[in-house]
Length: 418
Figure 1 (cartoon, rainbow, N blue to C red):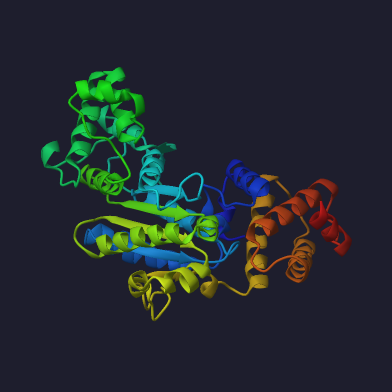
Figure 2 (figure 1 turned 90 degrees about the vertical axis):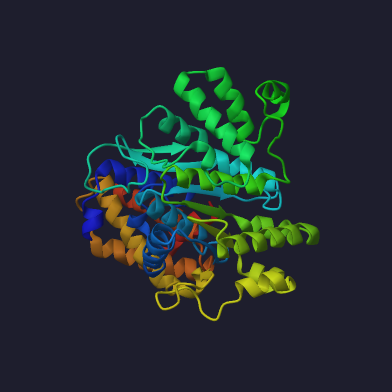
């Protein structure tokens, strides 16, 4: 086994297998242990974007992640999130869907972004410091912008605000004032006031309007100012010392297929404005990854010239062309059979550790893996990541419980039709 997997604790290996076995989705922690074929992309993102563009130059970027259903968009975005958090960046994962969070609804996007802003840190870590893999102490995942501000206000982490709060460069001054008042409420233990201010900042003021007016707050977060307030949130967090914010917009498959022409136009307008902001000096230390199926570029973007011009690309992103806007997961993937065999071996390695499986009969399991990949390639899918993961882990559990034995086509058929 490779060193990175052989050093994994059994408890962590079991957690990874449980997560992947239940849903087929990649785990929140330990992604590097089950990642295949994305190394070049992740290296470019770490060195060129997190390191040079955001970290050294204070710039910003927009990247379109392209891949059909099952091509690994969710896994890729999760890898980016894990990589960014390791370097101390704030991350924000947003699942877009017509009902829960349509991208053309600026207010809903802001509400979900505020609630999902996340930071991974160790106790005693300063804002802006990356996680040291050799450092002692448990890593904690803090979720929600208000939770991050509360940690800073209570002194549990040390921020690096250089000047007065009122001089933080934001687009929406009311947001800055309310956020500053929230921090003071946290520090002084004024919990009722803090809850009221949290409602405003989360975009959920609702029936609190009369109480907010008593505090001198007359504006509210609405669709017409939600994106400027979202950008103000980024400016606030970077002013506090965070190296930047990485936004990860996912599950656009449903969004694109169900949107009408008017909705697609609104999505296109919002994306165009976002790309222009990243290209200007108005929005620093932020990168947006927007996951979409290939037909978005092929059909929708081609019908919107202003957006097509901005997303046009001579080359896919690579070490040779790191500035390319489009990250094409399908173009970079290994041949499916090779990909799934490599992934399957990684999962076998984890199973040995998780279950203290001393005698998996390695050659037999590698042969079983080959049979499963061949069967699924012929009968089921091309690129079905989640289905493969669930089938293979179910088979490994069976092999462990009943003693290793050759996999038959009949057993594959049973799994497929269960």
